[in-house]
Amino acid sequence: MQVIVRDNNVDQALRALKKKMQREGIFREMKARRAYEKPSERRVRAKADAIRRAIKLKRKQAQREGLLPGPKRKVPARAAG
Image (cartoon, rainbow, N blue to C red):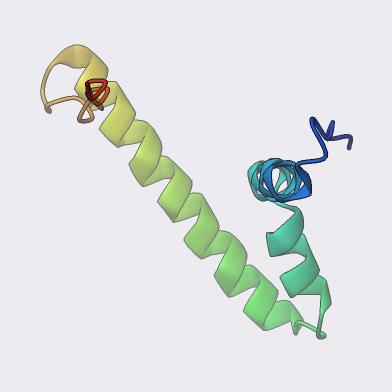
């Protein structure tokens, strides 16, 4: 993973790196590997993840078909001045 530092702005580059890591699921994986997870706990978590994904998929399909309102669109802030 690579992040470019522009104009010696390390804080901005660090934010970009954290965002990329979050998107890739690295933080979640690090947390999962921190301690041993019993097989029964792994099954429970995997089932909950599958249910969460299925619900999200159904919600998106309903939004596409017009049965549910779509996600709120962000309105860009107007430039002051």
